[in-house]
View (cartoon, rainbow, N blue to C red):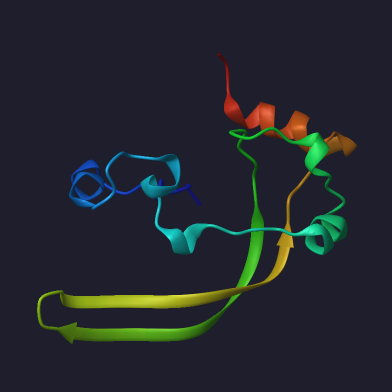
Length: 109
């Protein structure tokens, strides 16, 4: 399955009421996951192995918890699906560190 870039279209970013574009606004809030100490520990990851801006491969199983299909005045037809991640893996091939894996995913240059 090919990966799909979930970045918001430039026109949508420009319409936002934020005075300047920041990285977190390029992607919808609902696509962000935060891993705290307990979750990082279960995955065998330390933030000392990572650098801000690196990319990592994530494998997850999620359960659909809510589906909506609605019409509203001013916003038109909208659909949404809420997913609860129930299983998560951040693969580290050949026992290498997450930092090494993240750098591999960045590609050349």
